[in-house]
Length: 344
Ligand SMILES: C[S@@+](CC[C@H](N)C(=O)[O-])C[C@H]1O[C@@H](n2cnc3c(N)ncnc32)[C@H](O)[C@@H]1O
Image 1 (cartoon, rainbow, N blue to C red):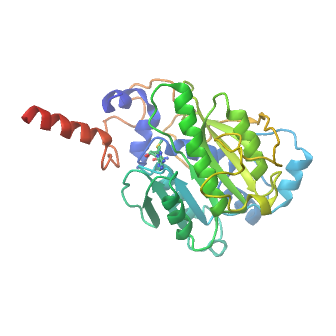
Image 2 (cartoon, rainbow, N blue to C red; image 1 turned 90 degrees about the horizontal axis):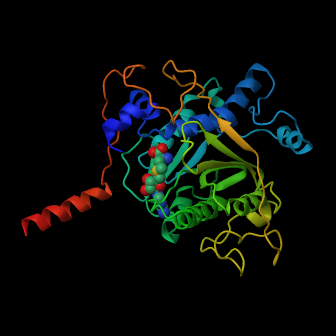
């Protein structure tokens, strides 16, 4: 889809440019945060003003597990990792949330540490360490871990997506491999009780992935922000309480980076509670997220990614240029090859 037709059709694309975000996907993270309080800011605000905790509207009835989880102090995010970050829309949201304080007393927050990683080059962002590399490679994984000098982050996010081929089974396999690499790195980076958010494709094997995430995390839910089109198979797993899953903290810290979680490991299905166990698929709560806390939604009460909004009905009277055009887009190589073949 060309830029102009996207401008006409996609209200999130336009709002991203108006608000200075490098990518419309920033709204996905904002909406997930609106529902799950990923950065622990709402919870700390409420502690400061003495009001009750809001765990989001995902559940109406509270189970014994929910009660146990709520008794633990919620982490305020000071260190975060953005895997597969280019062009940097999610990283911008993380920078904003970690530096805003949003009513949180400044003494509760050390100097934030943010690391962003991608295959492609990324425009610099103040206060962010950017690593260029493939998260499925051992070298990149080690580089990210080294950045924390033995420390750990409270939040790891991964919006990674391979270039889709249209062959659904293949695309979904590659997406799972990316997610596996992200989980592996996360076990080296996330602190006990930390949160992991990652893109998943809700295809056939996804129930097995949920089962394995439940081994590592206390609470696994799947979120579909309204900024993500209904037509897209993408959703986001929101995994909270690292180390409080079925495996316990000692077994889930620092999984082998090379993979091979057990002898039978071959992609999804490799992480088990005990050797030889057959991994059965799980069903987890599904949450649709639409809140845009603290962000100007441009006069729309509800922005719908699947709807076409004519230009001019919102503040976007003119077509704006993107904030971070691709630095080294793959199509440039194709253009170069084409011009060489025309000359010769
Ligand atoms: C949907 S984009 C991320 C958008 C980003 N969250 C934002 O808000 O700007 C997916 C990114 O995943 C990256 N990616 C895909 N496979 C990767 C890999 N193996 N290692 C690192 N990055 C990867 C792509 O280069 C692409 O930039």
